[in-house]
Amino acid sequence: RRRERLCAMAGVLYGLDKELAEREAAKRDTKLEETVRAYVEEVSGESVGADLLESLKDGTILCKLINAVSPGAVKKIHESKMPFKQMENIANFLKACRSALNMHESDL
Image 1 (tube, rainbow, N blue to C red):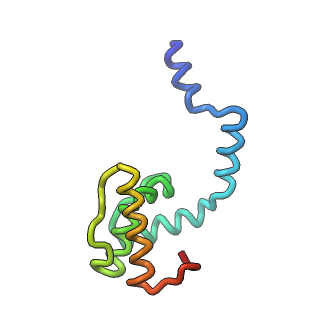
Image 2 (tube, rainbow, N blue to C red):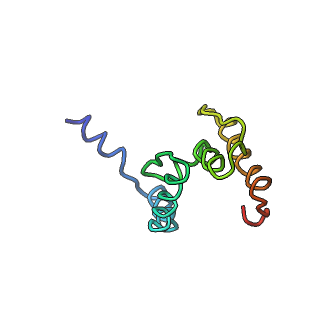
């Protein structure tokens, strides 16, 4: 019983942690996120998880998205969970946006 209480309390935030979580949640537009999620899933063919930001942070879905729009724009997509490989995916996505889609720096 004590263990159940501790597990239940683990998800509860207090003080500064709670305030920061509330600020972050207030910044997010759930309707816009749903629109983006639907677009990404339709174009890339990949399923996006419940948390859009968490799903995109490793860059794999972003790379698959740009490859769906411009085939071969990203040659190698790293499935690794190592941070430097995730950063490489995102860098490759941004590079492909600049070159394959002719996007300006200010649009990224």
